[in-house]
Length: 265
Image 1 (cartoon, rainbow, N blue to C red):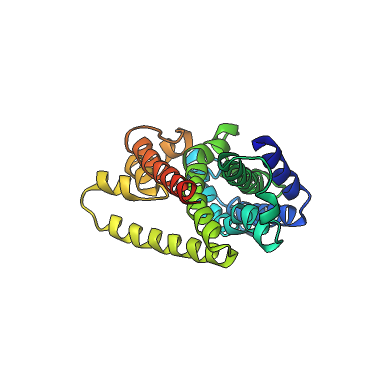
Image 2 (image 1 turned 60 degrees about the vertical axis):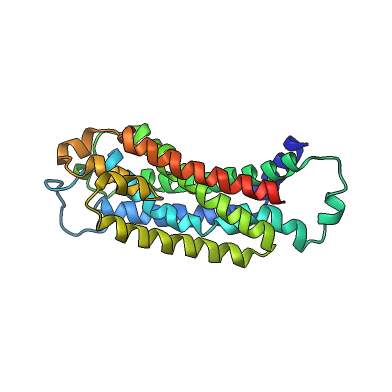
């Protein structure tokens, strides 16, 4: 039954026009933003003497993480929507009469929403790729093409962050049965993130700050703060020490939230 529920939710979203509107919107914004960074709209030739390549892993991490925040506002609609529509359509009582377990239902609902959200957020990287190589951009601002530069930010930052945020939103929407509460939860989490950044910026203990940042930015800065421009252009993202600890801490918290939802549901 897990696969049936999971595949049903994926098919629902693939047929839903909102799925393509979300992808198209993020893609268009990313294309324009990266094209602008690549000198598409500059009347004067730009050089890269003091900045990193726009397609380096270092630069793309900031770009993709920044725009993924916009994508987090889609989490209530997608992840929360997978379960709230059972109540808004008044089908929950009938649905619960079918022979599936709580494990099948909750995991399928959550994972299907998570997969769809990841697919939507991948349009940011695709937009960055297209925008960085559009005709009229300055080739001096781009380095050698490496596909992994576009993938690594998702593996280390975007997807782990999404797991934490979506688990919280899924729990809030599941028990409130209201999508609006999911948007309130997202705003509250982002406000907490802003407070955390302020507190971490004032800490003398950078190791502690690297662990406390929910987005992982503190851990990223811990290893890259003193990189030269050459290192920013050539190095892959650091995945060691405090980066790993940070990802385990916040990914683990997301898992605990989901387990709490599961135990109470």
